[in-house]
Length: 297
Image 1 (cartoon, one colour):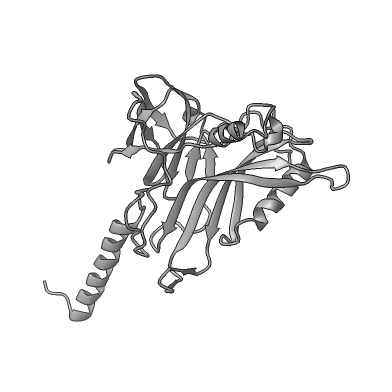
Image 2: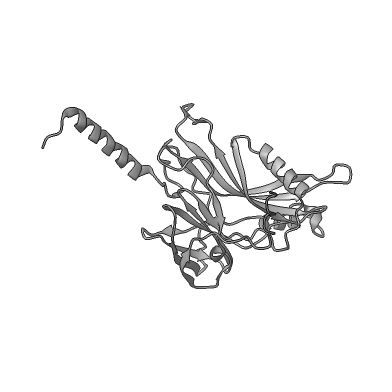
């Protein structure tokens, strides 16, 4: 049976929308290639290159993903907390300054993804690694932000959030997924931060795009610089982006929820590829963090 012209045009238009969504929805992390919406080049330098001399790696699969998996990343459990040369003996020497700066590097490795939510890393130096899984509508992470017992106070948290809010004004939406650290003079804290630009984006060509958003998820290293006169005061010392996305019309817009998943934490890698099997993506309680106080009636 031949449909009337008006209905045929409607069906054709609907098919075009579905096809476009199938092409662009859930854009996987693919550094070095062209972004699908703005057609700008995505930097290939965000992620750490595999070490050709390292035989270690991780492989496994993800179960119960709530949406399409866009990327799996691995970060070594190292704490570059030496944010000032005064923290170490002989810190004024040029040699020690170079060593401190070297120790402050945060590696982030990107996995190869399979169509069935399998993933694999190669060229990982020996050590413990935490994993980060980015889905289209949420993310799961097993990041160890703090080795000591959480001791940040409410004034600490307020000061940290205020400093993050005023930093990098390009992003107009900022959410702190987790904040952990130690209070007191020269206290240190690490923040898992999500930032989104929901305002129009101006490209290098001067074209203004209102149909896309930019989302970044990053680690922020904070240090307390408060004194008895200034009171509680924190400064942002260093950031390390984990992901940066260009979010188009078919994708999930705005800030997405994040969940701590214990199975993604502390994967030990030696000189061979570690098979972690199937990891079930679930939301677990964050360790070393007191449960929220019950709401008053």
